[in-house]
Length: 375
Image 1 (cartoon, rainbow, N blue to C red):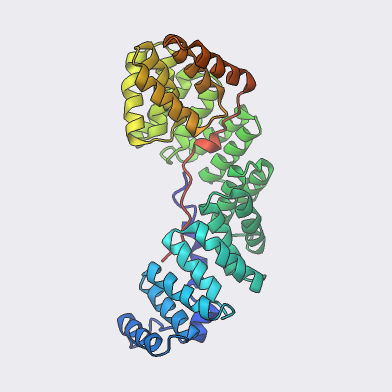
Image 2 (cartoon, rainbow, N blue to C red):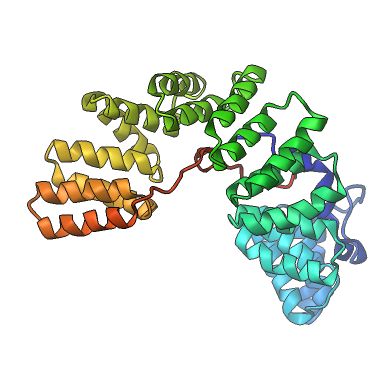
């Protein structure tokens, strides 16, 4: 959704230089010795001294500077086995996992680094972003809130925190971050979108529409803003308005799978299955995680008596979210069509159990950026 969310974290580039790296004589950019020479040197040191934890740790630093993160991780893990108390080692290991995209694996060493130095902004920031990358948004918001309080002017960090709050369904937290961002940047389209997502999560969808309209006025070609506004109108059953904004999103990104899926759903609701079906087939070919596409696809295939295909589509929809009753209802209708009344009754019983459809807010539909630390 927000391409620039994490680009503003350049101030955290100091994460590359931990106390361990400095203590062990990490080659600096000004050094005459190249990284290749440094790697060769420290490789020879660890071969001569296989019990030298500091040498393995320094080799890991060199590998990290060369962006050889898998090799760096192995070197740090060797150092950790030899001397788990070596200063800065856990931080560097966590950073290497983070840079490699191993967000879940980064959490343990970063927690250890933070325990060793509770005042480390580096460790806490990386830990918060790792929880974010691992989709543990509640813990991400907790740690990122502490960092944001130390740096109130960092708008990019506040946006990451706001999105963490959204995905953790801490909507009041998200709104507070929006207020902080708006104070410093009244013309932030991203902030209006975040506010809209939070308001929608609080079941204040008409107010959410107002926020997305404000974002659209500021940045009419901002990715996701047209889709988000379309989705809010879709929730309000204003399908003509919704279609207008889904088409506007497709004018920016012709392959936008969510916009295609909801346009197909509108066609299906308008009793135009021949128009909906090719759109749905295009969506599921691109993505396998858009639930509504599988629900509608299953319903249309059932109408066409393509029962095996319909069954596969509806089972995928239920796999993606078993708490939503619409897929169970469609599956029950399919079993009825196939003459299996026992299976149909079981599905209709599940529908009754799920009598109150779980709210799907706009935040759950928007693109979530991957956390990164600038190279």
